[in-house]
Length: 390
Ligand code: FAD
Ligand code: DHB
Image (cartoon, rainbow, N blue to C red; front, side, top):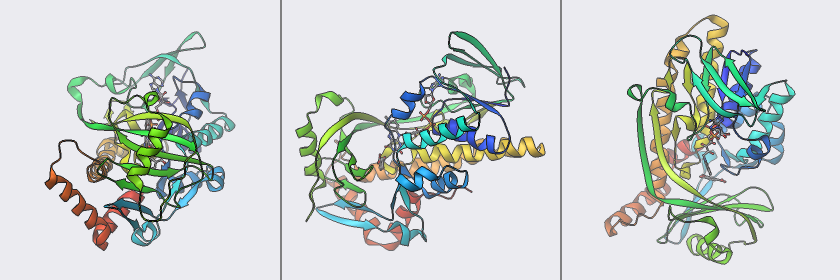
């Protein structure tokens, strides 16, 4: 079997890359370990930047997004008992965010690829990549009991943090930067009406909490917990009490309801450099992970493949390798900017066990800076709403 670009992983990065290349007439095969049903049911991120939304609309993926997505023109930072609105739209000259769950994006991408006759191999086993240093790389995998060899011009490693592609780069040729945070997020989905019209990021002496939403009837909430916490060991009442104590504020009532999903999300910052080795290109979580505080993981994955798709299209249409050669350095510039922003949001809003009184006062002063000055608020808003894709 042969294709031009073999893609490992049907997450946001792999599927969007396949979609963008298809629109330019370039064929791909996507090899994915999990089933379609599992992918479409996994709860992850929920905030789309303006650039991600624009790209989805521009490439024919806007219908359900425009119907179900919730446009948010600002969000709230809550600390020391008071709320402060960050007016994204006014501070950025019109950029906003859209709350639309990651698995809805994946449903849209999978439907679009299949409708266009795209080749998606779900439930592939034992995927390996070979020959990336030569000019005939291959992806080997077992599919429906059959050993398959996929010959490619290029391989895109879009297989997430735990995938196999990154480790195909010899250790001597890559550098990995890792920071593990001493806390995690406890995330829930609950059947309840929204507590707030906009997202609330709360910094409280007991720890961070986040009030987000999915629809008029389903809410997404998070709170900082121990990285060793087990989702099942937290009772529902204790979860609501913990959330209520952290997001309390004048005139605010947390709306509660049946909790139907609980998970503990680890927090790490990770970068692998470079993002290319020979004919292998890494994109998305395969190359980098951010803590979820800035809601950047999914958006950064999309930004990578937007860049990679343009480079591949330029190669196939014009024979130019400039974009492919520049891919790693260009992508890494955004990656490190986003790493900084996600680390900054995390450090500004979370409780650090070892922090003394000086650190806590400094944290409050920083929150005061980003809510009390136009320059501070704009810095936060521009980065939160996202850098333009181009
Ligand atoms: P992924 O979405 O991880 O996709 C990789 C795909 O590759 C997967 O489908 C996987 O099954 C497949 N794969 C892996 N190994 C193989 C293999 N050997 N062979 C074939 N296929 C393989 N970000 C936020 O911004 N906000 C959040 O609230 C948030 N919550 C998260 C919660 C969880 C539990 C996790 C894990 C991540 C969360 N993230 C969040 C991060 C965000 O979801 C990711 O940044 C985003 O999914 C990255 O997309 P990706 O396509 O690069 O990788
Ligand atoms: C959501 C996730 C985030 O990481 C974030 O910063 C804001 C919202 C969400 O899942 O809704």
